[in-house]
Image (cartoon, rainbow, N blue to C red):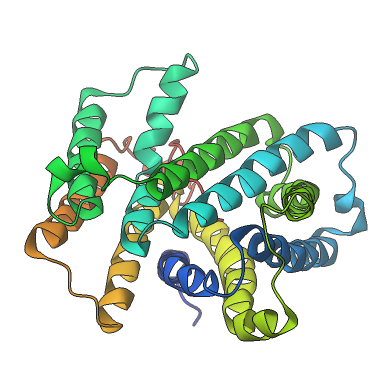
Length: 322
């Protein structure tokens, strides 16, 4: 007897949360040998090829054609993949993996604010309260338990760049609503492939101008394991697993597993020898608790049982941590 759909969805979402949490530790390690722009360029060169290959295999070669929307998909791909990855990984050069992962985990609450700013419905009072609580918890982590130091350098440029990357990907995710006729795999593959030239162009221009330095051959050899992790499990398998979980559990239930991102990052860093202070640990728990509480308390009621729709939840999906 095969596994139930909910069990498969849970396993897929758990895998994704753990892998994306590990990205911050692995990415931080890779940045010691490769510039964030070059690392992102190589990461998505491989990931885009794999995604396009899967798209052709599963949906046919005709799915590779953008059908008159190339510029729009390229703009969204630039926003989601170039914007998120270049900002987030450049920020990670100057931020700790723990704080970066918490900022990414705030995406569902930040999405509500972005939709409000774009003229959608005002977030519910519980969402606004939980956002304030989550930000307070995150401030304890970023400041290492001393929030008053945020005004004196604890909130650095790195954290702000990661936040900018998250906002870029939120806009990319919202933009997907204009292309509902595309499957999640097709939307991801086409935007990743069309957004990659922007990443490569920014990298080449920065290198030619002397702002960036191209890694040497030995640098690439040293960073190969990290690059393989970021490209295959991080940018391809985890995304496909996340989409599979959304299909089986619904977007709002699946978004709960996004809280595994900071948990995984903290766990890995602790195993590696990092010892968070009591207030920093409390801040992480406060943030994660606020995210979970918001998801549970603002969840719409399930449709009646006789609809027969598994996991149908008309809620905003958590942006994928590409």
